[in-house]
Image (cartoon, rainbow, N blue to C red; front, side, top):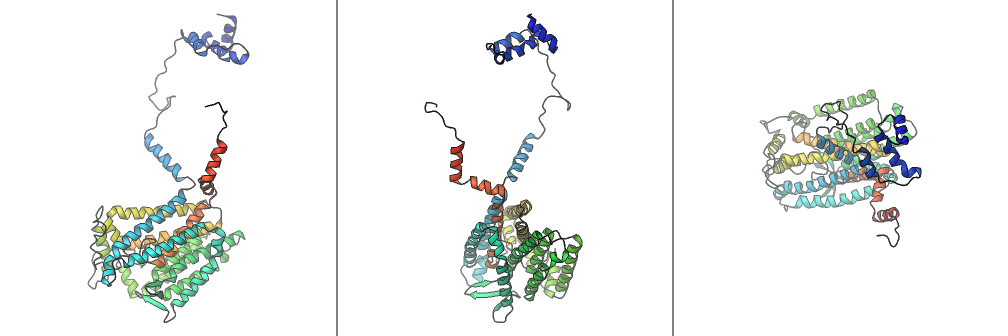
Length: 479
């Protein structure tokens, strides 16, 4: 054995064969001629017997252990990374909103056909009106999604004042109209009517979000009087105008929006509980003094229409859902819409959906609303702009609470409040502001810094320039 390898073995405490490997590998870096590494390794280790490492069977083994359920964990990680992408909320809001609207058009056509024939109208009468409202609403959605946040804030006060003016006109005799006992409509000529209270929801959200954002910038929300005034008085004014027409359902939605804004503003529990107690007492008095509302409250969970038929609508809504089964009786094959179920294309369109599309169809609708609600919460939670947080939270509260109240009434879990299913039920007055609100959420989702950068990278010109900048120049003779 050479002297240099013997000295290396004494210094490192390793066998001479192993100690000489370092010199072979390091020879090119020390100035000597390079040696064939493969031949050197084989020559040095040919006579060395490698120890056999036993395979570990327990948890304390040093070898890598493949976790159980690796496929499920990998799928979970991929799904989690997909949910955390910058454009997830943008695509969820856009996709869920459009799918709910398109499916709603299909169900409005199916559910309203018999009702239109009963009124001596063409079978597509209600569908054509809803389709026209959806076209106008699509324009509003695109416009709202392209508008900057400053312009949305500038629209808050004009929209509130215009809505209050129209809601006052509703109560003027000869101008306002009464539909199903509620004085909340304006006649626009021909077959078109307008319900200004539906626009009051959007007006309260934009105006309240702008008010709270300005007060937060001035650090005034720590005082309870600045948190309540003038937000609560203006909301009570809108509630009073709505209740003059007898629309209890819209008043409940407006109250939920007010509570959502107060919650997002960080209202303390005592203040929040006090406002909730006052609203509860007022709601109890309004329900107790109205026989119609008391009868609706008594129809929760019943299975028989009753001797006077007061629970006819609630019971037949359950019948429609029960007869649908897993996959329904088929599109257009509903039995309850043939005069058995009142309002099949408005308040109880979810029951017709369950009868014709079955449990699969109703769960699909619920999943779309859940995705829309999750995306709205995500937009409100990730932004640093207070106006965006309050407005996105208010819109999400509006859509989710109204959907829960409508579906809960159809299922017999809540009293019938007379509110439509957002983006799904028939009614242009409800569809137009709701589609504008969805466009509002899309605009807020686009304004996130990560989402804005991702959308900029998807432009063809930007991507082409980026690819050219990243490409390496090759010599003319290189392939």
